[in-house]
Amino acid sequence: MADRPVVIVSNRGPLSFKIGHYGVLVATRGAGGLVSGIGPLVVGTPTTWIAAALSPGDRDAAEGGVVEAEGFRVHMLALDPDDFGAAYDVVCNATLWFAYHGLFDLSRRPVFDRAWAGAWDAYRRVNTAFADAVAADAPDGAAVLVQDYHVALLGSLLAERRPDLRTVLFSHTPFPGPEELRVLPLDVRTELLGGMAAHHACGFHTHRWAGAFAACCHADLGVVPATFVSPLGPEPADIGAVAGSAACARELADLDRQLDGRKLVARVDRIELSKNLLRGFAAYDDLLTHHPEWRERVVFGAFVYPSREGLEEYHGYRRQVEGVVADLNRRWSTPAWEPVLFDASDHFARSVAALRRSDVLLVNPIRDGLNLVAKEGPLVNDRHGVLLLSPEAGAWEELGDAAIGVHPYDVVGTAEAMHRALSMGAGERAAHAEALRAVATARTPADWLADQLAAAG
Ligand code: G6P
Image 1 (cartoon, rainbow, N blue to C red):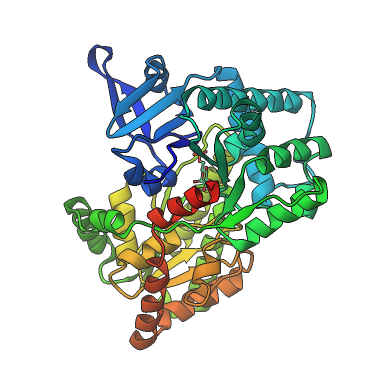
Image 2 (image 1 turned 90 degrees about the vertical axis):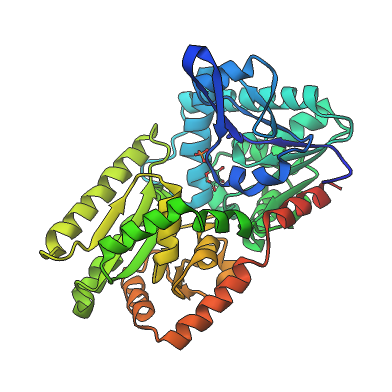
């Protein structure tokens, strides 16, 4: 794969262990886009993947040091549970994620109190534990590919421990500009940016995020570190295999029965604040109100699955989403038609069936690092589906010319875009779909991995 040995570091690893009968550990593929993207490329290679032990089974597996299973070599770290909880929930999910996605309700959050300072200490300790593991495991001169904000301080920690290593940090999230990053106190953002900038290079999915990061470093550190831009793309063979599977065919038949010939506006997302589910439903409500011709002729299929349920904001958001769906169905349903199909079952074959069957795919995030669904949809769609895409998704940089833009806060504009997409003639749909497919297949995970190794030098 590369001249240098490779080590991958991420919070969520490629394997998840369960304690089976008689205490035997059973490995399954971990969840998440990172694993489905680069997992197949490192299977069967000597690459070591260092990740946090997330489940009790993972913690048992961690005791054995490096574990080999399903073609992966994984080193799970059994971190102190209190440290892990504070670092993951308080720093990563409730602070950095909110700052990067512009999600703070500023009259209330963030609050940098003493409890937060304790969580930041925990975040430092978690990063130090990762750095110690890399320092112990990494072969001489290895390329260390660090993924995301959970482990952002590794650059500086590894520079002290193992100057022979070449470290690259890839951020899958957006990155805010200097004005927005000022929501973090100066000492925190200096340490954060310093830890990131100490990698040999920092990669992002778009020029926009890379430029914002460089501007933040310039403003707060007075330096501009090496950055590179490398958007991830889906692996056509992998998503194609799911789309062609018997399980997907069963789900598609089931969905077809439910839709009964109606058009499908679909979304496939985590139930996540940045995904903007509420305004998507508000736009659909507006469509049914102001374009009555679509009543009984369209279904909004929300294939969404729970995420980060340990955080109160996420719980509340899920409840609100479910309330809005119930309200829409109560107000608009007729004996023959339920306007919203809400599916929170986290069933990948069913989500892919929805992507195949959709006439319109709604991807309207408030902000998103990339959004792989925007590329996966056009790749597997059977019906020349139209993509409605927020310019705040990183994927817009590549797909913007082929998709219809929907401003994430503009509910009327989104409703009108739904109407336009649903009304579009066959010729225009085919042209759209062809353009979308060309962009969606332009880059694969192998290109993305190669860019990181090139950046490692
Ligand atoms: C999304 C983001 C990634 C992030 C991941 C963490 O997939 O795009 O940037 O690493 O969430 O999710 P988790 O469930 O592990 O908190």
